Amino acid sequence: MTLSETDELGELLSSTLNQQSTIQQNINPDESDSTAILFTTERIKLHENTVKVSTRNVSTDALYDFDNWDECNWEGDYDNAAVTFKIASYNNTFYEFFYTDNYKDTSNTTATWTGNGSLVFAAGTVQTAQSDTLTTNLGNITRAKIVEIDGTGDYQNADIYLSNDDGVSATKVSVGTFKTFTTTGSKLRWRIDNKIGSGFPTPFGTWGLAGTAMTITKLKLVYEVA
Image 1 (cartoon, rainbow, N blue to C red):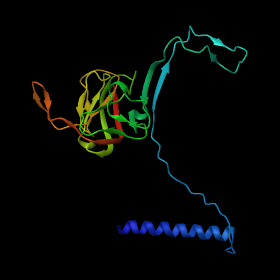
Image 2: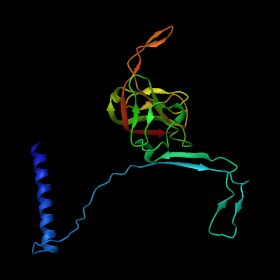
Image 3: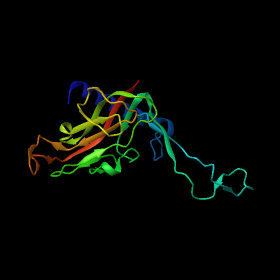
Image 4: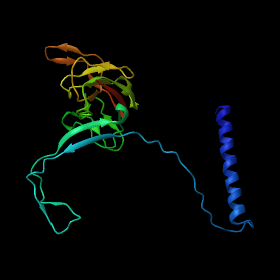
């Protein structure tokens, strides 16, 4: 423990003892049995969120219970599916903590997207995780950058890709470096593979590729719009 850490610990203990003494003096000066409640404050860090706006054509749907003027009760099933109109992140910054699958591409993800704060890749098999579309109707995404990725295992050596055309073409990127897209597109996605090492091509396939165990708990990316 460093000297500064020792000083901070001493200040914390001193503050706690002072709080205990103050409560005792104010609640029960005679030091007999008593009950006291101590309220403390805690700092909570909030992250900006991503907003998805959807629209639906309801021109052919019907309402019922017209006598309940404070309610809008639809007939049951909608005639038309909802259509995503716009997806945008505050300050063009997207966070993924893997507590929900709102932005998981289910069809193209073989890794385990747990839904409780982690993305898990198993050892011995090549697995992929891909996001769903992160931006829509914002204009051309000219470049993007993986700012930060946290986890355990060999996640720092994972292959990471970005695409601005909804995954049609993807380019391998490095964490902390902007990728300028040569394609034109407004639909940003990321992809992560646990394929570590280079392969050796043969007529029967590619040898030398093996999935490595790793867990990712946070991903942060930023993007720029023309």
